[in-house]
Length: 254
Image (cartoon, rainbow, N blue to C red; front, side, top):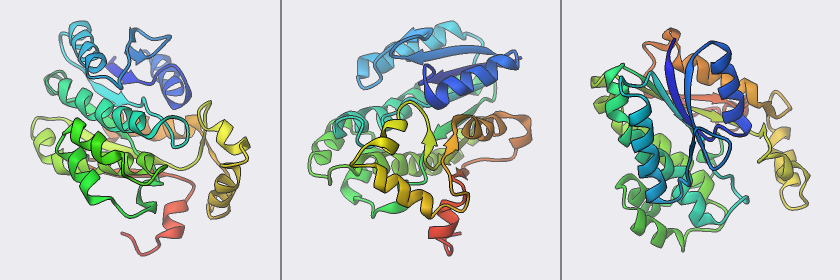
């Protein structure tokens, strides 16, 4: 059986993935702000460093996979916290755990979003993220349009993956990403019920061929595939699991 580390394990997609991996008999190292093997705040550099150190200590022989799922949705937290957690709280952990993943030719599955291409990229903000300059990124983020940080950080994750896939691949590490559409989790359910966001969610579903939001387990199925031997030749791919929304609204994007 394999050993996997994942963040955001206490709820939503992370909790569903924890259940699925455990059911297959795998060993898990879970990370979250509560109810996990490692309790840490990934919005801080100290929290990230503590997680990296703890995971490396708990998996001295390496990791078969790392799935960083911890994140904040648009409208659920201040924009600067979204930037800190969704981008830097993912990339810094992947980089820090890279040696452990290389030991076992492990796999990384990132969590992006089908909303990422919906708005034009803020080039200065995106560049600061890709450069790994957190302070500069947060400074620029102050002037980025409110409410767009979630989509932009998810887009930046995909860019970062594609920019780094050669280096990781040559170390034996497969790295891919899943892009869900609206998914029913404890974090997103309030959006479907709020006066501000319910019309937006309804509009998204009206343009979704499946005409519904996904269940967390459906996103987990995609993650499980990308972790599996069946995906052994899949590198640098963004797998949409959005009920067909992206294909419908961007039919010429290939």
